[in-house]
Amino acid sequence: MKTYLFDFDGTLVDSMPAFIAGVLKELDKNNCEYNNDVIKIITPLGLAGTADYFIKTFGLDVSKKELVSNFKNNMANEYFYHIPAKRNVIKVLKQLKDSGASLNVLTASPHVTLDACLKRLQMFNLFDNVWSCDDFSTTEANPEIYKRASEKLNVNVKDVLFLDDNLNANITAKTAGMQVCGVFDESSADYVDQMKAECDFYVYDFEQLLEIE
Image (cartoon, rainbow, N blue to C red; front, side, top):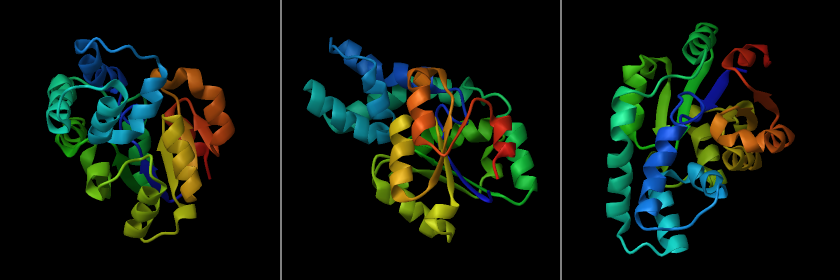
């Protein structure tokens, strides 16, 4: 593979505990009842999409703008100072870049936390493009975002390998025509078998990417 499109949370960095805690805090604060499936649903939506989903599904009496602001405040400190890269990610990214691959990020996270975290981990400059879904005014739940990203990369959508730890995002990218690689994360451990069935590839460790041709 020569063109990679990486998710961020749970794929490149070990941030899902902070992300999940940051958004679910707002449901807990409002005494809302929910089950584990809510994480699979909201992860590809981004903060704005998650706010819409929470307001519609749980009837939160708060504006979308305020809810998104609360999400960011709840998790900012972790992204700015603490969240680490996942095991072997930086080493493998450097090897892929040295081999001439195009490395790119497409994530539901906003630039305010995304860019700061990647720069702190000295990963930002490894990527040709770092995109938030906000740049496309849509979410990872929309197949069009993957087609538009391919157009910006000047490659056919089928020649891009998309990597994500979220089942729904991988299914949507595959629907758009991309090759997809599931990435193990503790937050999506319950969906490993489904991910393996739906994805072209599945990795537990980033070093396994070097074996994909």
